[in-house]
Length: 350
Image 1 (cartoon, rainbow, N blue to C red):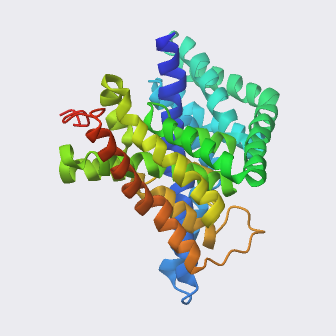
Image 2 (cartoon, helix red, strand yellow):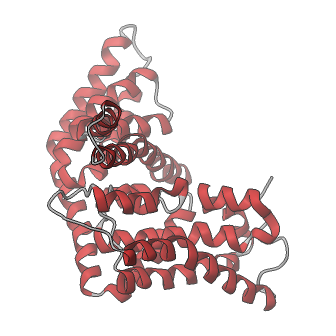
């Protein structure tokens, strides 16, 4: 069971998230940058950036990148890996709004089909691509639409519920997605699979930032500047060995996410209208905040007309940077004084 979970739930999802990062996410950022620069005047460099971002975020490209990322993470042979390009592109298109989840499931199945025959025959160069592509595309035609619809409905339900009950859902979404970020699974892939945007996406950003900035600041005493950067701009997953040894070290940042979530949804009403994958990235490379900004100027839903105010900018900095740092530091200090967190409990492994 552990091998199953690692291969399909941890490795495959991480590969999918990296594929999304290298296509849709970077494409959205580059496209937004180029589009905003074009407002200053027509320029061949600015137009190139806008076009490059558009190409990178094309659904066919995104699907192919996700599938290849999944196959690579699963250790697939070269011919299987290259064949997944077709499977991923097809599945993402047929899956619609819930395409990422369809790609995750079908790319895994296609990869395993391909690996069953890979390097088993003398005509491997024909057999392996045929089995992988035909099997994967057949699964996509049969199931991608329904997987996508299911994921989309779940995501829409979460987003609708967050609009109706912003306080409680702000707490819940922020905590769950933030915890997923620190666990050895991919919160980015989860958010992408569910298409988590809008107010719920903003709460997810808040929870992820609370974990990353929270651990970075709370452990500054042990890890100094290197730890601040590696956790604040890298990943809070670095703290997992310490969490296993003393689960109490996780409570301060979880409490922080339970506060910043409803602050995001109720006070600042921060929304993620950029790529859904950004909702689960937090301050990793500042992708979460950049995704919020991208959503202001180049929203995924082109029907939205957003003009960010000073309050929006204040909310972004408060929710993503300032409040996580201050609250986690305060909770962490209280836990240290109570003896629940001892010196060295948050030291990162060498």
